[in-house]
Amino acid sequence: MEKKVYLLWFGQTLSWTGSAMSFFAIGVWIFETTGRASALSSILFTVGIVGVLTGPFGGVLADRFPRKQLIISFDLIILFLMCLIGYFAINDKLTLIMLIPFALAFGIFEIAHWTTWSAFLGDVVKKEHVTKISALFESAEAFAVLLGPIGGALIYSYFGLTGVILVDLITCLFGIVTITFFKSEKKDQINKLSLNNVYLDLKEAYFWLKNQKGLLTLVSVLSISNFLWGFTTVLLPPMVLTFSDARGLGIIESTIGLAFLIGSFISLRYSEHLQGNLKLAIQCGILGGISLVFGSIRPSIFLLCIYGIISGVSGTVQYTISSGAWLAITDKNIRGRALALRGTIAQMLRPIGVLIAGPFGDYLELTFYPDNIEFLSPIVGTGPGRGYALLFLFVGVLYICVWTINYNNKNLKKLSNQVLEITNN
Image (cartoon, rainbow, N blue to C red; front, side, top):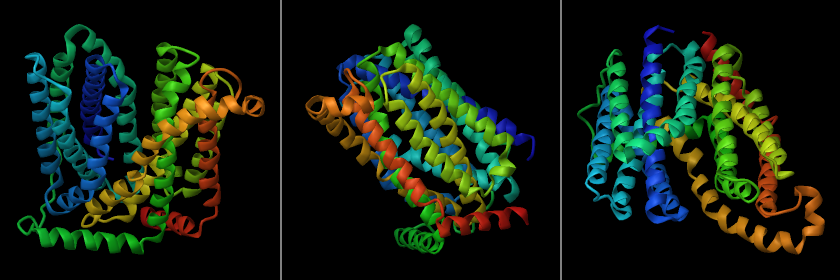
């Protein structure tokens, strides 16, 4: 790969870390203002569901307009929105109700940004390097996951929400500068955008994906996996806080962030071996399920840290293999819409998992587990939080089943051969 790709990586690592700081600080501000976790959940759900609904339209834009200019435009729009939030915060005019339209806007422009960005990565390297660049920018995201909350908490404690947003603005501008070093391909269809053409573009992408049996199978399995993983997002905090405190939860979440980083380094180092290796991606899925089972068997920070390490590393490697396959199969004319459909399908069930995990977990914790404690305690242990752990265990078993069933899937085998054939030519 060209050396300037690493400059792009550095700029985006800073930019994404700044964004992670801002979103962390906004979450803290919401909780401090309302005292309710549900308030933050409603904002996050708004961002997520809007992104799922509008994602395919971002793919249309990514295929019709120069992707570099689109990324810069989306960054500047998000930058402007953050400036408005900072302005209202510094003047004590920011309210939770006011954040709802911002959440809607972020849901639209964030997903459009990420769709265009994913397509843009396929433009800056040759086919044989698609898995390597996926791994490289997975490490950028891992740094953001690891450093964002730490940096956001530190700056927020001294300078408040506006201080964190200021840092985000500076890092975002630096990221934009690094993108300008790359040329943007001209698009012949730039002046042909209309409602009818948007419909035709999406229809073309739908039929294209329908004929890609391997990619369609892969994203369908990931959709079910993300639905199940949505449970863990909700279950982990109450499961831990019933036998530990915020420090214990912080240790586990930091371990997960560190595991993401380790997984991205492994993926980068062995990118050539990972390319097209769908069998390994399936094995990583099985490992992820085993980690969930392992983390549920007893109330232990140590066991949950092991869960975090296994799930973080295996999940990152799996995502790198999947991303490399999509970048290899798609060409520049369909890539934006294809990756947008990938994101929409892969994430469309996750909000449902998030919504039902809370009530289901509460039922198991408060009713089902106490009524069946003699039978269940040898399985998940005793004490508060074991009802949540029971659901954690159940999700892990289902996760293992989903990937084991597809271990010898013919479509995934064909996809693996297809990726290797493309990248080796």
